Image (cartoon, rainbow, N blue to C red; front, side, top):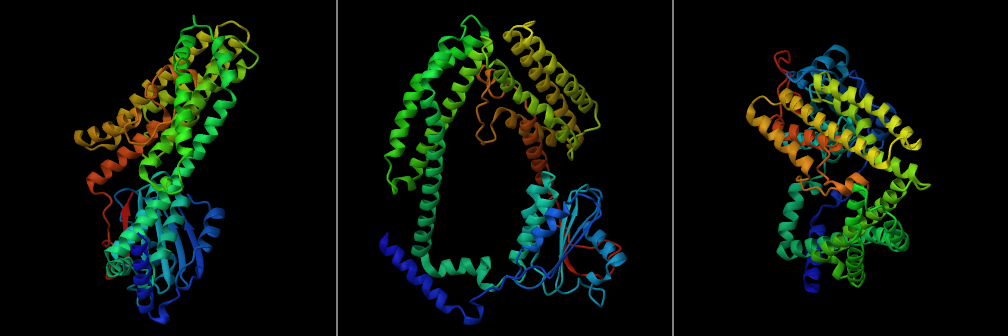
Length: 485
């Protein structure tokens, strides 16, 4: 590999020598000015303006941000031009046919779900690059992070507007082709190994934190398990998990020994990254389980720490209740529906019930098992209400049964953890007794909704670019386009 690296260095040096001296430096300059016309009222100016002023362009560029509340049927290009003609003629060239030189406009319609980019002739980029700028903001915009999405879009625009030829994607591809297969292979090999080595170290560090906690509390964990009442339905389930605790701890110890024996070179291999991740996951789950064992002992035996243990059992349910309003108020959340009203009513009732259960538990009017039963029933009821509301959301967004089926599939996969993202173990008694997909949480609902809407929108082709300025645009032909998100 050393020969490959030497050849790589020589070839890349030759390419650098070929670059003209005048193109050796790309100047970075802040925007000439930043103007925000937030007629939709969705942007945080205190965050937005300083962030935009820190973005470097290749040439001084006037940055304009314009937002308005439209509809899905609107042509954002036409609206931006109408707004400019009505109140900002300085955005338009003297002949009225183009956008003014030195100008870049980032436009956003948070209601109609459109994003657009417009620029003067001396700042224009290709349609593909305009789409790239818009796409860079869409993930944040879909999550209603309007300010952050705007910053991301302008930052990407700064990278592409007046980009020097030697920084373009086309040149870089050509450069690598010229450098040859050896250079490409050698460079890629180095990058992959460095990234893998860094990831392995981070996973080992994550595992060490959890493994250290488990090792330090090992004796205490055994004492806690020894006093959990096996006659309790919840206690017996947690004890079943504990019976494999020591064997799993020993397995984690073996993994720890293996990953810490790896050399720097060995850490760069994909198979050892998998091993490090296995160690970290095993140690993290043990760390969560020993907390559950401690909480089970404290709660069921009404030890001095029972109140803290009970609060930890309530935490996932409280989090779901707190997140309901954001879910219902988001785009496509169907917040004015009957199923939304049922969720809000349930939330308000549950917050009162939580206080009542806690008071009755403190006064010993109910047993810890009874309190856990009530919590289980409430979380099961919430899951049922969320499933009902999912049908409302699907019915409101899907235009046909095919789209509805696609959304149901995405919602189900989010609930069951089939979306290929690792689900964390819920460190609670109920989370230990029941599988992770038993309770349909607000977080998984949000994940399924976002993915479902995105999948259906892609299937409709809704993300395609619109380049015209509508019937009112006349002969205007300024560089610009918009797309939906």
